[in-house]
Length: 217
Image (cartoon, rainbow, N blue to C red; front, side):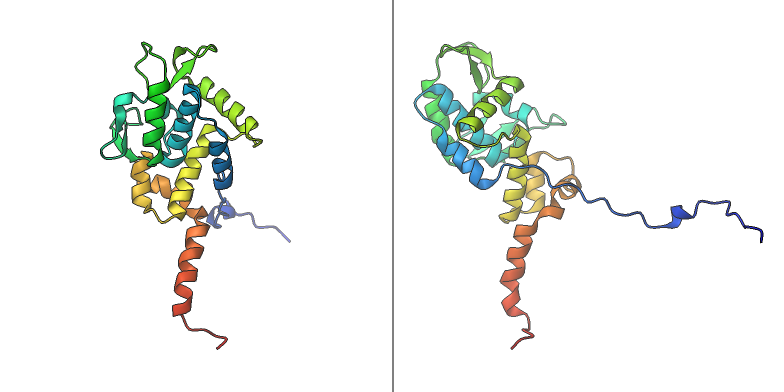
């Protein structure tokens, strides 16, 4: 018998399978605490690194935003970081962890005098300031600190993912997180993170469960 050929592609009418986004690599809470608590406090470079960790984990700044901060970008009265170098160039205000106030104070007090305008600066290997801390410098710093704490290395962006997921799971509204992260739209934040909010979802479910009819009673 003669075969009848279809002059159209029938697969284009089929529903495409959804591709599940891979879970973003983030710094686990216990690893962050181990890393932060492993840092000494005696030298200005130690205090700088403690400030960096608090800023990355609890404020979720992009790497370049963090390194572009000026001392005047810290609003101590309102406990906000003014991020001026974000995408779209419109400044945004991001809250920070209360511990950062004392850490910054200790860092700025110990830091040697220098000509650079930036908040986070690099050392020259002899305890003096060499200028603005670079992306490569921060990565090398994190590699050294993770290794010293006996932890696997996590890149700087893993702190931003940890910030997003931990605060969302902690109950922060998606719209508020989107603003803090400097996303152009809340849709971006939702697309990136909402499908992985299992902890918060489970907590809400378990809280409501006692109020729902029990089939076993």
